[in-house]
Image (cartoon, rainbow, N blue to C red; front, side, top):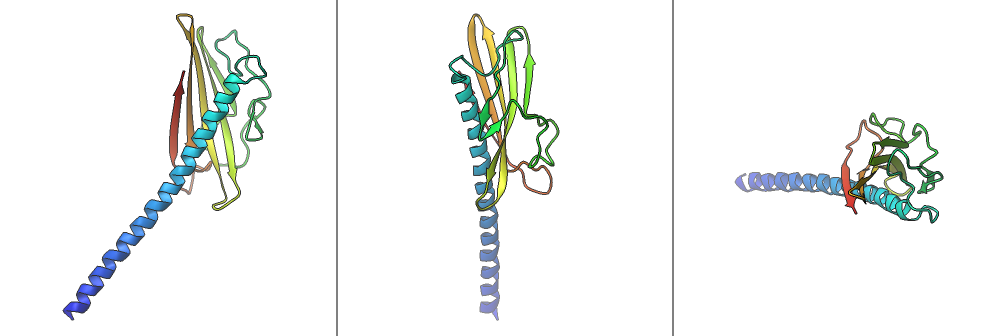
Length: 168
């Protein structure tokens, strides 16, 4: 009886470890999707900051600057998007497609991207990207912050956020 009880205790301990490892591996894979979404947002911003039709950046630097049109990433025209549609059916408050904030020496552009995954799991990842430009002492500085999410939905799921920041 003592040997049976000891064997049962060991089995329960092994089962508990297995369940915890499965939960951990699921969280790690979802974290990976969030960091890839953030990286996609950074790459989009870097591309359009340097390749806007050979005419400089698509992102403005002050109230007098002109923002680009026709900026597309992942087959999405982010400057033409209005209120995000599906898969943004249940987004957190504040999602916008293309928003601008300006001051006398700075400008910030915020845009969102949906990154569909038709594989397994079939879900859509999202990125919210802020591109800030400021002129300080005659030098133009750029700050890109991309927040990636493993899902665009804000309810009923475990939502992870990973952030990448680029300064130059």
